[in-house]
Amino acid sequence: MTTARIVVLFVLAAIAEIGGAWLIWQSVRENRGWLFALLGIAALGAYGFIAALQPDAHFGRVLAAYGGVFVAGSLAWGIVIDGFKPTTWDYVGSAVALLGAAIIILAPHQAD
Image (cartoon, rainbow, N blue to C red; front, side, top):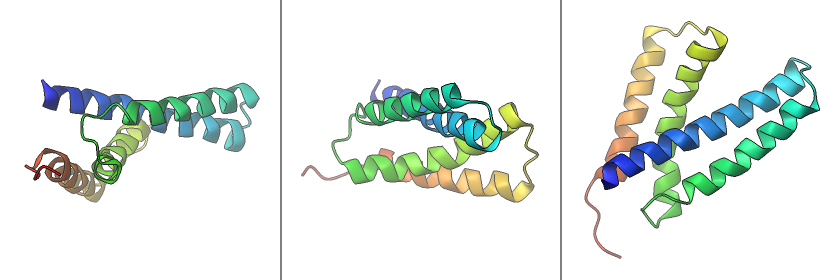
């Protein structure tokens, strides 16, 4: 159950952070209006709370592992939402980032 919780929280955090950044991008770069910016700010705030729900008590470890999820999630968002066409190297880099995230968060750690 803990692994499933970790994965679900990372996915939700990615949606909130990447979605929030995308909304602000749309507001600023695509002139979509201030409502997009405000929704983006709310989503980015939600990201912070979601990340804090991770079972690991170490902020640095959680955020380091989330970095890999962010890399893969950003590419996925670009593909699905913006029609981005990744290269083979984008996929390889994303896989390496996710492997690093898995090692950081799922490897056995000594009790502190």
